[in-house]
Length: 418
Image (cartoon, rainbow, N blue to C red; front, side):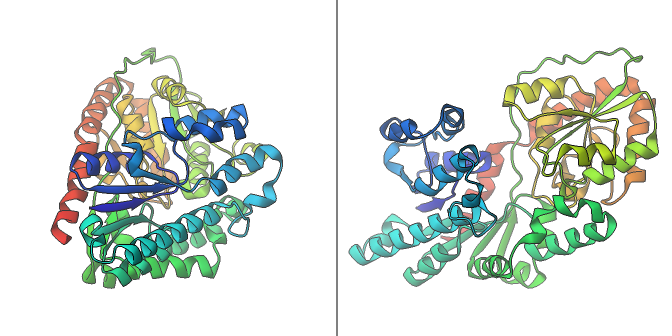
């Protein structure tokens, strides 16, 4: 039986929870917030604008399986709206992302220790392993090791040493984009935690070959490490794209507006391209003031973030999806776009190398290659007659990558180790 801990419960966490529960292997899910029928008491504490966010924190699990630690996460969500940003200051704020993660980690470790002290002879029959995620695993793993439990470590993005090397190089390439690179501001203490977490893991689960290859060679040689690719969403979508070749080719970027996602390279590619029959649509969250982005490229169309169904509608209005990421784990937005019928132009570092059948579902380009990005965008603009076929091939490819397979890979390694 597995105790799984994650502060926010994203899509891949939900998929694994479902897989563990269906396999009869989920002992408990430890998280910050979950909106179940029995615990909606804190709805009265939050502004209306946050209630929709909280409703997304529901899980198709027995309520007795879920254990909560809500306070810091509630404060983190409310602080910006209450103009209390000091509470969420990077790393140091009482309700910063790091504080939320570490608080849950300590809490889970204490719960494990208490349970072990009370039920010393039976705890291993109830829990045989803990499954934790980067930045929220250290104390839980230390306690698990003391008790004799196996530690499964999910690394959702490239290992920090690789990330730091790549991002610091970006500062040299595009110094004006340095402000968009939050990852380079991580303290030595935070990085040491990451190293210690990985050292304690018995098994490492990576979402892509890129993340797997970012692990130190000694870790890959000494620990069981696997790649379990995220599954694709299932959409019953009918394309709304116009096939009028007189309209501009609509190239879409979706994500945080930073150079970690390769946005500076995409802007450079558009300047190299300089074609009136191509328009760039950027949907995402600015990490600096919007004026900065318009100074870098004046001609792009900005679309703010929006509910998921509206994102899908925007995708359907575009022709090609581009994500030239420098550091990633496995960007699920690639599979979202493919499910909407968009072929891809992506880097291996975006984590979806397996999604690309060259010239069929899209194109793979090297990182730091605006010229190659421009070349592939130009190819699509010059071969508009291929868009429908490639869009259909992209849909079919995305449909082959399922959450069931993702869960089977992880359940397989859990069964092998326990």
